[in-house]
Image (cartoon, rainbow, N blue to C red; front, side, top):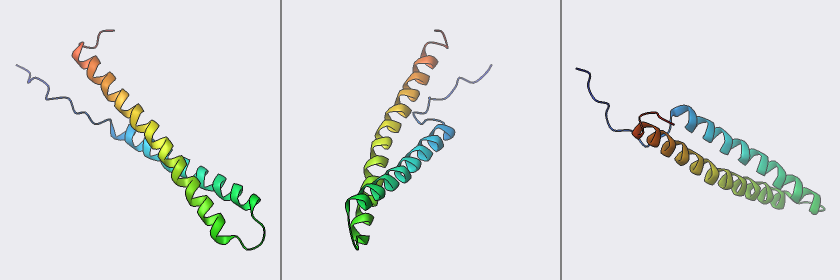
Length: 91
């Protein structure tokens, strides 16, 4: 007699988590570059601190935004999988 499957884990697959992390890191990089470029265009003279703050702010804001979307997407995937398991794979 086969053993019944254990309780479904609420965690998404490791691949899905890795893709989400990659997206967050890529968004942070892009946001940092945009923040740096935007601040560099606005400033004249010695602006090392300001361009650094612009890059840091852009990176944080964009990474946080993508992180929110990634968490929502991973939760939706986990809920979808749970519903498919409860329905027996139908539909």
